[in-house]
Length: 201
Image (cartoon, rainbow, N blue to C red; front, side, top):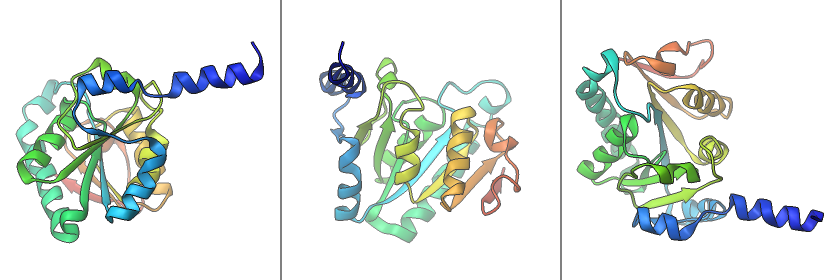
């Protein structure tokens, strides 16, 4: 296989399967290259949310309602600052912190977006207005997510959430870390995120 054929094969592997996305969601599909232009034209303020993407387990399960309340408080405050330009962005799947995030967007009438990898197609997707598929495996979307957001809220989370929070901090993006639910949010320190705002139960 020649170099050109190899490049074409890699491009096909990276390209989203639009038909499969259409089967899973009625959100508007945007290509990664479209986001910057759409954001500028619409004046969007993108608030990213990272955290547990699986089922609530252990002690954190008993505090799911507390997590919902704290997230909604952050979203309402962001909407007061940015009005209709606020768009909340997370990983598109419909469990854990992501489920709480997208459900809150529905309740509060806030536009929701997913930036995620093709691997998300194996899961239930949350209701949202826009989805941007990037790559095939979870983590492929992280660079676009971090480059696109204007602020970040973190609650719980694992290695990917940690990497994204540290990358966002390196770009000077304002970060709110909600602690008390375990995971990466409770493990990160003020030395690692020197400009972060810390919120506790």
